[in-house]
Length: 310
Image (cartoon, rainbow, N blue to C red; front, side):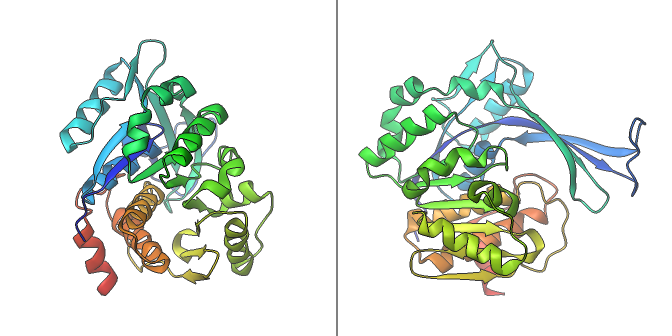
């Protein structure tokens, strides 16, 4: 494998603030003891950095404010080698931000986000940068883009025969992808996001697998529904199945889905069989949750394959 692919990622870049409760009970209307840290995030930014660390050439289309957070995000992107020529820097909006409050068992209790700056990724802006979409081996997108921007993205991808890999992002945003399911080479969604896309509720693992098959029937080339510690279900038009998660100690689960999406996009660019693409995604998620950082600094293609052969 040469690892030399031109990948284009489109979506959010943000400042992540993670609040980890230090006690089992979180008391409302009171100050609760916690460990609070911040890092660079945003689904698209995370996917872009993971792809870079897997050995791809990566361009990112996003928007940030002309504030300290935006300046720092841009500098970090350049430091790791991501091309930022198409990043919008604006004084009209703050840089995107995400605040998550996590329980003692590391599960997300509640979250807030402000991603208004992504409104600047308009159909006109994507048309201005259509060369990037034309020249990409794979386009990755998160669901923060507006419906009109998504329409333009998929039109340009279709005209240039470039496969698109999407991350469903959140249950609230996932339905934005529904009109484009037949045009997706791959879709990664967690259980709640897949339920929102399909307008249903999965009562058990068999129904999760049926959900993955339903997404494939609706036209998704490779549909993946993740279930955290329970692994994932996947389906194509020809095959489907469930794979268990790797047995690892969870340090921080944030970013695991973004790493999985990045590895899936990499696998598509490599032309790997679907089962190997999915296993590569699982390995990337496992590599990420054993790190304290949202993007594991020592994720690499070699590390993923070492995990797969253990």
